[in-house]
Length: 297
Image (cartoon, rainbow, N blue to C red; front, side):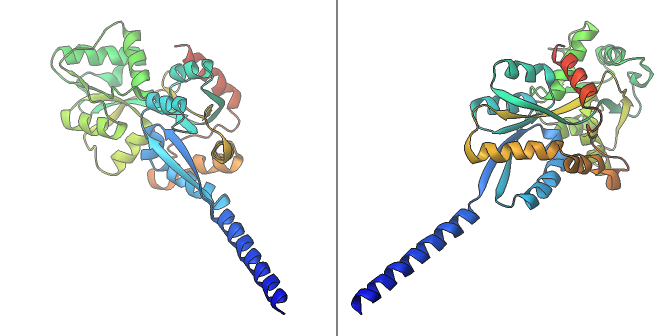
């Protein structure tokens, strides 16, 4: 009798232990760190996409590290982030060559725009191309008519801005009117609005702040579809491993999937009258070629 009771108790303990193990396994949360450029996060796109992704994978917690593209890549290189989402091809290619990131996946694009006061003291709206637009800003600022706000944070937008200044053949660095804020896109736009100045912005962040009434004096003064295309790419960090790598890869696959692309194509449409980002469906090779050209600039 006593032996039977002992066997029963041992069996009960085993059942409880196994049940606890199964429960613990099923409730384990896998945290995936994603370093990302500010425009994807501040527009709300990433929170929206993450909510859809975690419906499919409820045991995953996507944690965003919101910085400029330069720092986002650095964090991936150090292993602080498993996934990085960036828009600076000329920076990205250096990390690809060093094999610190891999699995390049283009998942969205939109455009940079030049914004400034509605009065447009630099006559940017009359420029024939982007280089002329920047040269007009330089000349007007030298006459004391305006200022230019630079993010100065090694972000994709900042990298693009510096490339454009280089193409003009003039150097604004050190000028009193060249305001280096070392800030994100939203703060740069707000500063330009307050100082009656110009800045380079991604169109998505501009539309969000304009809609919210935060930048009432700024207008889009120059845009085109060739010189100012803005391509967003996802990568895996070479230092990521285990379950974080598994779900980091799945997150990137979700972004590029037909489901993820559909969410991207409609995000912002109802609120802003047009989507804030464009999907890459059907344009994969075209965008890859453009990215390649931009990576060499």
